[in-house]
Structures are given as structure tokens and as C-alpha cells.
Image 1: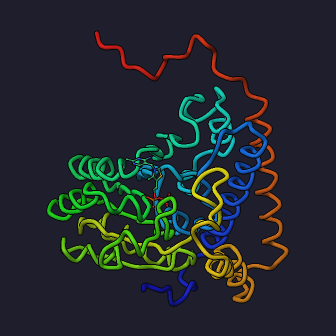
Image 2: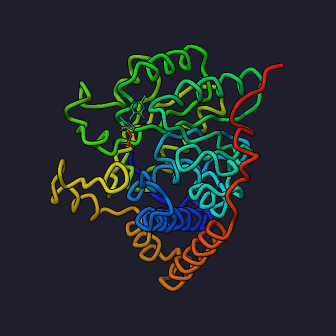
Length: 329
Ligand SMILES: Cc1ncc(C[n+]2csc(CCOP(=O)(O)OP(=O)(O)O)c2C)c(N)n1
């Protein structure tokens, strides 16, 4: 398991950015759940508990780098800098949303921020990210392509084909498996032969790293090395971030049907935001008051995003097929 030895090499600005990003994600996701409960949003795959994974990686990325996500991608989008007003409007199907209200929670994209898209088809973005890496290498840019996927998606053949190609062509791709221990209700232990996803990288001769995905400093450390390798032309990295989703797979799914309360309590006791808050205050990077001010600001931003989304209009009926179907000449 890779661990960060110190945060002293990280600037205070970067540490606070990571704290703020995780809090903003948490508050966005809490509001998305409220929208779901009110019926304005038909359902959502909550990433509450997994905030540290994309935050630690995206802390190393520029707007010109690329991120591709999956069905549970609000946290990937926010960590990559997508505007929360436009995201909330997208969730609510409004014309001011990132995709003009036609993508919804599972297809948020913002090309200006390098967020090439969430995707509801499990595993589908893994080969796409590989092609994005090939494009960056062919165009001789220093861009990096990062794809986030779950432990369930890691059982698909496309991951193996992709890592193989990325390895032989030394593509700047980072494969990040968010191992939250369940694919819907199927436990990791039941579905993953060999007991490790990261270990599979050895078969392709590339680094495979297991990391505590609830510790943003560990994620930052591992992400930094993977991004450095990618930019230096050394090829791909497979990261297995061990994490946990606090809520059910989707909507009102009650996870206590397939996992124990003791297990939930164990992971929740290692909450990524609480850990970071403790670290920042104990190491005197920030005072409790400074962090409270960040919490309050994130709360205000999510309230404003919700108002923006709710007050925005739905797309016009005339727009029904615009940007949906391609017209061939
Ligand atoms: C190709 C495909 N098969 C099945 C589904 C239905 N489905 C949606 S999410 C999911 C589980 C995915 O689990 P994992 O990859 O571990 O991600 P997590 O939900 O844990 O974040 C499944 C089977 C789908 N959307 N696409």
C-alpha cells in the first residue's frame, strides 16, 4: 500500500484546495440526494465517501489534461473544475446545464475543463481514455488522460486490452480503479480473482499501485508520480484506490441488505474530509476557523447552484433532437 510520508512539500494553497474540493463535492452530493428525495431529480449515484480519489489525482492536472468518468462521476467533474451551477442545472434537466439538460447526472461533460464525460455504460470510457492518450502522444503534447472506473468495470476485457496497448505504446494514460468494494451488491471478494486489481498491472510491465483512497494525501502522492511518468513519456499507471461509498449504489438502494453496519462504521470512521481537517489543524497548516469559513463558502455555492438550476428553464421542445442525432449529408 502506497502511503504519503509528509505533506510539507505541498503548498498551503494546494492543501486547502484539496480540502475545499472534497467539501464542495460532499455538499453537492448531499444536495443531489435531497433533490432526488424531493422528486426533482429521478435518481443519483452518490459518490459520498469517495471524494479523496479524484481530488488527489486532479490536484496535479491542468485544464488541458483530460478526465473520463463513469456513472458515478459528480466527484470527478468537480475535482476537474466543472462549474457546479451548470452541473446542478444538468442534473435537473435544464437548458443552462453542461449538456443543455440532455445528458443528466450520468453524462456530464465540459470540454473546456477537459472533462470529456461521465458515461452510464460500465467500462466504456476505459478504451476511450486510451485513445485520448494516443491522440495526445501523436500530437506531441504533454497532456495526460485519466479514467476513473469501479471494481466492477475492472472485470471487463476492455481494461486489459487498453492497458496492454497503453503499455506497448507508452501512452500517457492513468487508469484509476475506485474500488469501493461493491459493484451494485456484488462484493469485491466474490468477483475479483487474485484479490487485487493493482497486481494485474505486473502482467503488462507497468506500475500497479494500491492506495488508501480515503486519504487524500496518499492519493496526491500516488497521483503525482503517475502524472510525472505520463508527462515524461514513461507510459501508463494502474492505481487501485481502496475506498467506500457511504450510501447505496443508486437512489434509495439500502446497502445494509448486502453489507454490515460494522463495515460501514469502519469506513466512515476514516472519512476523508475529517482526516484532512485533523491533519491541517494538527500540523498548523490551517485553523479550525479557516476551515469553517471554507465549509460555509462551499455551502453558499451549492445553495446558489441549486437556485440557479431550479430557476433555469427546461430546453425548448424545438431543441429535442439538437445535439442528439448527427445529420449525415
Ligand atoms: C455495460 C453495462 N453493464 C451493466 C450496467 C448496469 N450497471 C450500472 S452500474 C453497475 C455496477 C458498476 O460497479 P462498479 O464498476 O464497481 O462501479 P460502482 O458503482 O461501484 O462505482 C452495473 C452493473 C451498465 N450500466 N453497463
